[in-house]
Image (cartoon, rainbow, N blue to C red; front, side, top):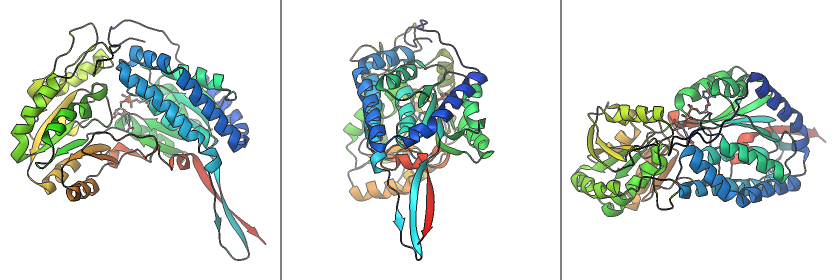
Length: 446
Ligand code: NAD
């Protein structure tokens, strides 16, 4: 494993082969009936204990993520805290997983929420901790056993979470982490018949392969994929605040964020003024040592990923950039580009780096048209002082998670997921557990 801020090797790990993946899946299969039979209150208690272990280890988890993924220490603490909170929230599920009684004649009709069995959770490198927890928290709560496969580049916090789960007293085989290549371990989740559901977060390209593979067994799948979200700034908005916060909306986690608002759409009459206001905000982003509490943006994950990001910027017109260290480390500065026409790749493809395209629109209809002119539909922001417009545009933009006069769209107690090619299904929120159960309908003749 390489620290992306220093390029130093910080750890070596062994990757599982197909046989090791199968062994973990078999352990999870063997543990499934026992875990499903644990009394709801006891399952809740174990999840709460898991949450408490995460809380006690929060600083260690955060430091590991800083070293392994280059996240700023502030972000990494939030991410570890999010795992704790997701687990506490999940601990409220077992006792509230209610079936129903439906009026019928000649008997009684009741429904049960049955766990699926083994759930495989495939995680990307950009938010290794929370994304794993959004899958395993509700899955465990609903009575499933879970095998997590972290991304090849960022396995260290997942390994630590497995230790914490064991320390919390989760029975053997209920929660496992298997390191390995996507094409080996990830694919085994897709093809092994004992895995009843795959939760995949990652690129849209791989997500489509996972969905096609799962179709062979009609396997359940949740997909959380890429994004190309719009930050729409109307002329009646608080422009100072919109400009001051726009860098956070796209450069958080160095832009390696599926919700990054990587297109800023600005109403034409305030376009020049907005670009002027945005410049000091972009130049002011503090990029550097992720262990420094004042740092706002760390490095990119790898040299190869930086090359990819550069490939988007080179053909574009750069308006201005912020500053970043020169190296070692995979640094890239916050960058604002003016796209060369509607088909510019920087407007249509996910850059997944600290690059934002700014472009003008004429009126409300034009803003919605541009915002929706993408195959993605994950997130977005709307800046306006007109509540009617805020609601109209929120309804018209095809995206799963929107925020008005804010860039915040992730809360563990509200649903998260994408429209169109940004994904399938929802995580988090009050209905999270229903993605991990089958409804069984039983009629009892009287
Ligand atoms: P990726 O698709 O390359 O890999 C994601 C995971 O899938 C990794 O663990 C990888 O090993 C595994 N994998 C790769 N090929 C596989 C295969 N053939 N079969 C099974 N598993 C396979 O994505 P990435 O580069 O790690 O992550 C970045 C992407 O994730 C971006 O597109 C980003 O938008 C997306 N993402 C989406 C969300 C969301 O909630 N919508 C959140 C975070 C990241």
